[in-house]
Length: 540
Image (cartoon, rainbow, N blue to C red; front, side, top):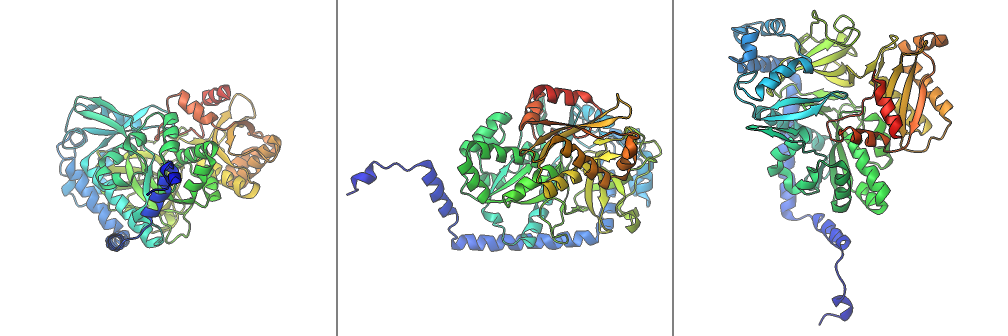
């Protein structure tokens, strides 16, 4: 007979979580067999990755010929007179001479036509689009084909194979996946448009739905404030988790958990195996992840699909500054346009005589030169400028992402880029213990000499005065950027930067006030529009 004391005892949800934690850590014979089989499978993929790196030129030539053949008899084929190109020996020279490089705004007309017609730039109708956003602009629509989804799956398989080979201690087959997704959806007749993260989640849920850390309705919840509450209530902190997120959103959820339930936060970070993050302004948040010993690994992913992931095998760093390996066998053809005044004007628009290079025309003398990335994909994009600037660190196609072409300030030829600011943020964090999470910069061109005006949100209380803070930012920028230093000499063209400090969550409130709280939206970092600063200061 059961004792009375036990009859009245109810099993609390926390007890269930603990029991579940122990059950999931119980390793059965079938678990061992599955683990070994899966690791053998990914080891096979790892060997393919190593082989791809040696055949990048051959693969890129093959991909270009296939993609040109695939768009045969489409509108873009007829418009630029493609006849006979895919049979030509020198296919690239004809391809690059006949078709101009398209900026996203210039390519929009083809996308708009594809919403209602077929054979525009792909042989059949496109039923799905991923919705993204220029950092400071309106929505952009990226066509999604079945072939593009397969390429993305292949990229993810490669990435996991690489992680398992490099870090065999990771419990990758016992993880819960915690993807940050949005469900921005538009539908009209046969066409529907989703946020890219939601598209991937829905397309691959038959593989990984059982491993999602939260129900699908929570993951696809478009209301950011409500999503934060649901995550805090529903997450099982005793399971090993991996986050697949944009870094700023990962920071926001962790910070929300830390502020509202410290006990849950401690358990959650203790069991956090890895954060897989998309390349976007990672430097301001990495010090926070390091504080809790959370490993980070980056994929170069965007609404236009996945192009690379970090090479942490040859560069022993799993945090944020290891270079990326270019995926050259994923049905994406790459071109590289040197980022200089010969190819771009003062407003960073492409000049008419700009000439790009394919992979086989790059050489060791191009290492550390800056290139704007241009892609042609099986996802319906042709010579499409990504607005990302990369620089190769060696002649094996490993590269770092420097900045976005439109995220820069060059009012007095100071050539201030996002990469410079991120280096300053990293130095402030490591040397001075100052954590900057969000910022935006505007050049005050109403004065002479002018200055840069900063609005900064710090993760912790500033340990020095605002005047000292401004002075450190100025000195660090001068060390990193010789063009900035020259313009600061004797206050000739630039004065000391002006710093405005705002409280935590002000930038999030500002993004929410503009209806921009979803995964593909980012805070504009360097802008010529003062209204951004004015709006943020008004909210603060």
